[in-house]
Length: 178
Image (cartoon, rainbow, N blue to C red; front, side, top):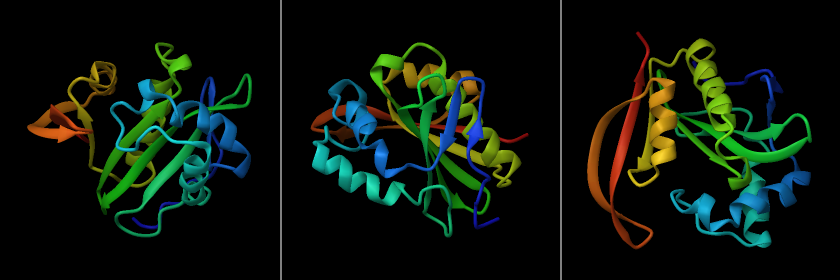
């Protein structure tokens, strides 16, 4: 059912998921400008000015009005009130979504991406009625492969393609609601 308009903020054990705010710029710059973080993400390493441009549509990213729109939440570490990443869900069809996420490198390996992604997945299934959720990634992003498999996703399709000037294997994972 569209629109998607979840009640925000969403609290998890360690995180707060909410719409982005104009004051998120400095925290976002930390991970949007990090080559390690954006290596497998479609956007390039960004300058402060580019992050400001990217932030603008995210300010209203807490609601989806039509097919093709992305629900986009800031991932906020509750203990410090720091934006440490983003978690997204694309409205691909009335019953299908696409999951995405990015997390500041300084917070990798702590289960925080899993906490945010599992919350978004649950929201998509329980609140929006999704029956299938996909995620696309570069096969070299082994941490994301492990995360998706831990969430219950399975490999659906792979293909060879060029990504950021390099040949790689693109993977499409899917989560099917029983």
